[in-house]
Structures are given as C-alpha cells and as structure tokens.
Length: 383
Image 1 (tube, one colour):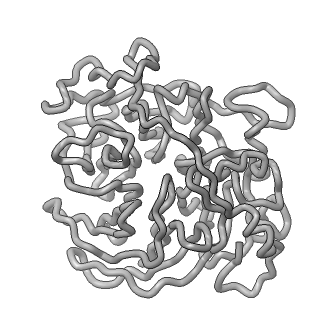
Image 2 (cartoon, rainbow, N blue to C red):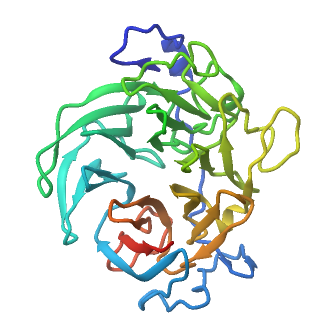
C-alpha cells in the first residue's frame, strides 16, 4: 500500500504488496439457496415470500420499521454494488462496467463517469463508494491491485460528472474472490476500508499484510496517529471478507462479513481487535479472539451492505435474499423482511428523504434476474 497525498512514511514495501496481490482460482457453485422464516434450507430452492407478502410480481406488504409500499426507484442496472448520496443526489457503482451512474428523481440513469483502469473479474471490479463533502471515494480493482481514489463531483443534480482522480490508497491486495471493497467514513471523519483475504486466509492474522483487515486512514490516505498499531493503517484484523460498515448514533461500529461454509457474521468492531479468521469461523469462545454478536449460516445470509438509522441496523443479504433489521441494543437478534421477494440484495442505504434504499444483485451471475433487474428499491421508515 502507498499512502497518497501525504508526507508520512509508510512501512509497506512493494514486495509485501506484490506478495499479497496474487490471484487464485476458486470454483464457485452459483446456487441460490435460502430459508423460510421457520428455519434454513440448503437444497438450492428459491425462498418463499414471507408471511404477508405477495409473489415477486405483486406488491410486498410491509411491517415496522417500514411503512407504506415498496417503490421502484430505478431498473436496468448491471451488477450494481454500492449506492451513496452526494448533495442529495444518488450515485451508484456497477461492478463489471466500471460506470458510476446518477439516479434521477424520475428513475432515469445518467452516466456520471467511467472509472478508468477497472479490471473486473470474479468478485473484483468497481466496488464500494463513499461520499465526503463534494468528493466521491471509489474502491476498485486495477492492474496493480485494489485501490481507493477520490473524485470531485462536478455539475448540478441531473448532470453530475466526475473530475480527475486523486490516489488515496493503492497496491491493496486483490484476488479473483474475497476482495472486500466496502468503504465508509466514520463519525470521527476517518475513512474505513474493508480489504478481503483474497483467498490467502493466513494473511488475515499477519499485521504486516493488509489482506483480511479493516483499514483506517485520513481522507488523504495518511495514517492517523491514534491508530491501534503505530505506523500502520490496520484498525482490526482476522477478517475473511468484510462487506458492510456502519455506525449507530452512539458511535458504535458494526461490520458484516462473509464466512466460509459454516457461519456468516455481524461483528461489533473495536480498534485493535482480532476477529479470529482463519482460526475461528463464527463464535469460537477462544481467548484473544472476538466472537460475532450474531451469526447465520451462509445459505440464509451472505450479509452484504449495512446501514444504521438511529439504533437499528439494516442488513442486505445475497444468498438469503432478505433484508434484516437488527436492534443495536440487542444485536444477537434480528427480523427478516421481504424474504425471497426481490432476489439477492447487495446494498442498503439511508436516503436524505428519510426512506431506506436497497439494491438488488440478480445480474451478477449468481441470481435469477427478471426483466427489470437489477433494481434500486425504496421503502419508508416509521418511528
């Protein structure tokens, strides 16, 4: 990794970066597996709509914390991955095309720009977005590994465009699978970056490697003086493939994480903690390793994007094909919504108007798309 736009020295050599940049091949069975509300199933069947919901072609019923009807915001997206809001306007990334699209108020999609040098493949490509002031931060896979760049957002609503990029982090580990890719600004103003283990599981425990970590850097890519490991961007380690980052109103940080074959995780993240991978998957009760606050079988979850509104967490699930709500006060519990209704769900975000947006991922090669996929959907939140 190179910390860009800063005079601070970095401890990461080119050799370390190259060693963890190798790509491996993993055979993936692209099955859509899910659970009914009464329990999980692993027979490859498509989830049945939960109680009170119509079939996929009808209108889904809602229950608290949601109100009103689910609305379609936009259709026809190609493998969307992340959605954020800049000055009230929505921008969404497409993993394989490298495009960043502005979503108009009438659902029209406008090309804000194409991120140059994106190399899609497997789970890599154009991934996470984060917004700060008038800047868009972008995590993507390039020829030299994964990277984070900053783009000024120019123009007005309906005709936004991206200016020239500035490197923030580059040479991050990349692989065909387990690329991480979620980025977000915390309440402390720092940028948090999820980097997957890139199928090199042992490096998640190595503090001189950036794979299998959550990183914390300044908006320019520098290393904060109060990071838990002096001179290092590593904030937490022992991760397999973090996919969601969010903070509740009291500043508590949570992350969703793909497991291997046994347990997916919701973790409460604190500086310097070791979350166990690959020694432990799910709760192991092992000294020195932090257990998840909630875990699910991968067939009922594959938790991806994560949003927090007040003291409630919202979890988008891919294989599980549900939107889960988790009360931060009791994070070992959760409630399922819209099970099987919209297929795979990749991301979720709180919109400026107080509604909740969620993004499908049925065109990613592992879903069953319909004529309108992929879509951005919206539902109101009620107190």
